Image 1: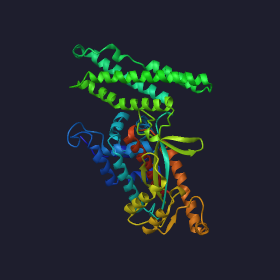
Image 2: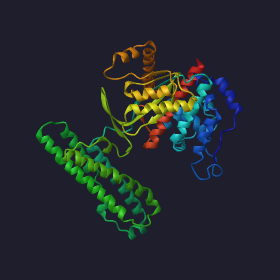
Image 3: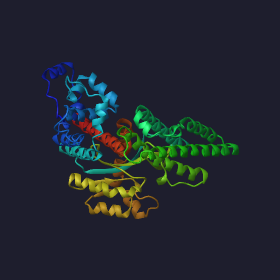
Image 4: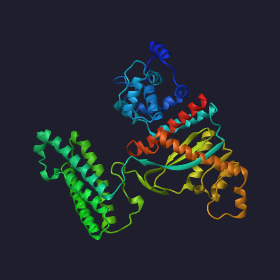
Length: 468
């Protein structure tokens, strides 16, 4: 049964007063999280865990505790285990999280509750935070700057040999688990005597071929290239055999699937299309010499939503994840983020940024700025039509004398200097709030990670401003 909060413990509060004081920034964050709208947003998601979560079942972890512990996790960029330990060992954090003398929920409990929170809820949560920042005068929404960055998925560098070996490993592991469950159920085994060859694992041989390919790839001789081709042929054959095994096992259950096998067979059905895609792209690239377009490539079996993004940055020309677009107003408040599909042109993000600002604040900013990648005459005209007085979009390439004179004006140069600050904001988001690499799994987990990172940043920005 869903609970709102624990009853305040007077004895605990008296002990905390004598033990020490909460940091000023944390005091203001504590007050922000008391907002009822923020609370109701998360409560609505947590209530969807089971059909009757609101009314029946054992008393659950209070919504207030879940909200505040997740805030602590992302404010200090902790793991779930570290969050549990830090809150358990600190009287100040016990007070902040409203746990008091009650047992701190363990990391697995917190993880299950966190997975109930949807990315759309976090978007609304952040918009409410921006409104609160406006009310306490941390920002007035007069300046808007927008820019993009790449948040990487939590995957290693993808290569065809590694992806093939991963596919074989996942299929073999799942088949072994199915076999173990069938061996435990003697009746089921007697009814469907599966052939031994269907459960033969190929993980070791696939791993061996992948290591050989990596070794030959370091050499540049013609013999090394030929040996690498042969190893690829053997690895592809192993991967095809594993896929055929999985298809054979699935075929043994054409009708009613036993309940205890349903999750494993679902995993098998989910991974097979990805494995077949990896085999196809390997054959096209390695054997046919075809340059496979980036949208048609799979870079991870475990994070298939990840895209290939080439920005030609020194030291990291290619990144694997998603381009994330950020809008920021003065006061250091990130009002919006968007996780883009693929690698679309930057100039398409200008209008959504302005439209979102108008919806959030009810009026246009006095100044809006972006990099030269967003410049177009249509974008400048759109911003002016919406009532923005100072539009800072530097034009790339050749400039006419009148354009050079326009961009040399003092207000334009000041706007360019102000816009450069968004690079520092992105750096803080990556270094302090984890947006360098998303640690949650799946496309929804990726969006959830980005959302919590931005929210933690905004909570810190508001708390620091009010404490100063």
